[in-house]
Length: 595
Image 1 (cartoon, rainbow, N blue to C red):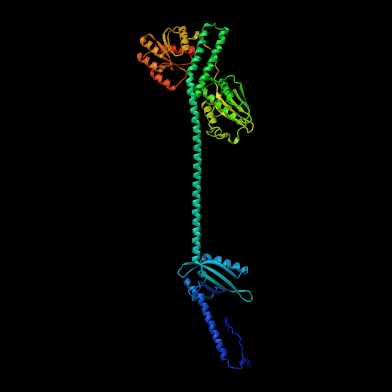
Image 2: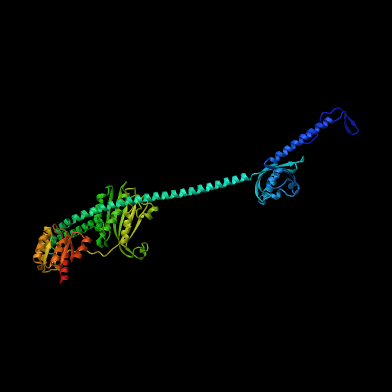
């Protein structure tokens, strides 16, 4: 008998056939003994094989392909799942019954697909319930056994408990997911920190840029303050010079027949002197960078003076054209701010043409805005306006940024070329004027800014004559350290009927007043004088006689000085250079107010 239990043919001696049986010619004791030994050896090997299978972690099943799938063989180590071999062999427990219900349908589908494709070996993993109700993972390696006709009759399965491996895989998967989650969270945190860092860097850069711009603005303010200080320093002397010219001109007009050529020439000279006064006041206000009071001014005069300054600072390859088509260009504004508008717009225009040159055109027009036209400018009302236009032939402005050009600190210039405040300042000034500003620009075709400012009715200034100047007989103490102004005041006030005591020293004037305080009806004193200022002199005079009216003369207005003087008791101010009619009227107003 071989290992399969079949009888193996051995050598036999002569055999005799008796009827239907083979009969050995000699006794078969030896052969029987040999066969018995082989059988014992086979059984021993079978026991060893079963023991090996039972000691293996895998469980071996063999079941028939019929209804219920009866088990024909199961190894003993199936007890690891809490069941016995006998329960499966007797049919008390079926393998299908202990499979997790969520896995049955998938197993059946895989089995049908393998059968349809003629696959005899397949491996799958699924869950089973142990006797105690615990869920275990099984790796099932199944082989189909076919008969000689190729029909599957049995399935043999080797089942291995892989629960620990699955748990490790699940732990590894969970660990990987946890690591991925932590990596994602850390990445998001790093991204957030990086974003905050970039934002902080951007804010620091913006703060640094703002600081740099503020430093530039501070430096500019310091320059302008220095200019203001310088302008204030020269204002006294310059106004004294102008005062002398105007005073002697007005005195000459008193001695020349009205309508004579000399009279007409002197009146024209006086008009030029008035323009010089306006120009000086504009320079003083611009140097101080303070807002002056709105006054009636001719825009054309400011434009002409600004264009003269521009010609000295703009490259020669840029041609400046001035057009004045306005029949009436009077407005009520602070002249300094008109100057700011023009200088900012013209500076930007020149910058746009700095590489190739071009033409800068400054134009003035009268524009009548009716109700329909005012709809295009919601910020203004219908009426008469002065249009101040600044046009260049430069590179133009990109349409995508035209809505932002009036934003503070927005600029297309390179660092160090501008702060982006110029157009913002212009926009603010125009709004304060109750006006409007618009822009027309195309890349490569230049830019045109159009500023609308409310206009007023134009009034020509006429030089006054002595016929309309008020007169008087009071006694006046006049104090000024400029000899020419003292001479003019003596002649002018004497001609108006006043009795004059003039002095070029504030100390001497104080002594003269102290000696006869009741003999004076009015004191006119300059502000800036050596030894004793006009404020100090006024304080001493008022200490001697509290009711003495005092008029203070100054070259330029300072709010602090005015407030201090008003509190001290000074009645009125006269700004240099003197205008004869103005001085005469102020004198009468102060004296009559006393009376």
